[in-house]
Image 1 (cartoon, rainbow, N blue to C red):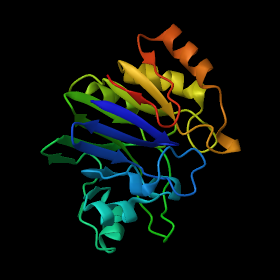
Image 2: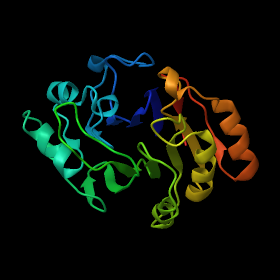
Image 3: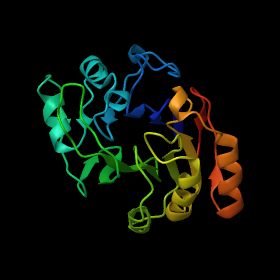
Length: 225
């Protein structure tokens, strides 16, 4: 199973012919590793509805036929565009042939470009025999410990570190201590000036204070846990 960083907070999980795409903000993303038409996902997962996360979801879903999993209010908006959706709320799990995804709390805000207010989420994903935790856009909060303590250990955490709109790299070190993932891949940094930060410093600090390995990926690079 490969995890490909697509830039900003977007990722592709791939196992053979199965592709799960998360938060496909590509058009208008200066760090995007691919074009929307380059993706042919099996399923699309969304953490929340801000423009830099919902991104090209509708166009990709229509072109590929992939269903979209998003929290209920966001799923309703996307479904009105003629896209197949699954609409869990926080704590809800959706199962697929490839695995499962569970929505968990993230501490943030979210309103779509069309004005739909929706609650942000993190995503616990069972895929390729691993558990992946995309924290979404979140501030540091103690319930991250509770999320990570439920079920199987986290193999890989996809963690925002850019600050300004989310937790910064210093708070993210504490988040890494809470989550106790085998590996941490930083994201949501360096896309725009307000979220520029030092990913290598984050790596040094996490690896000196936890047992997690930090894997810093350039857009387009992959990690195989």
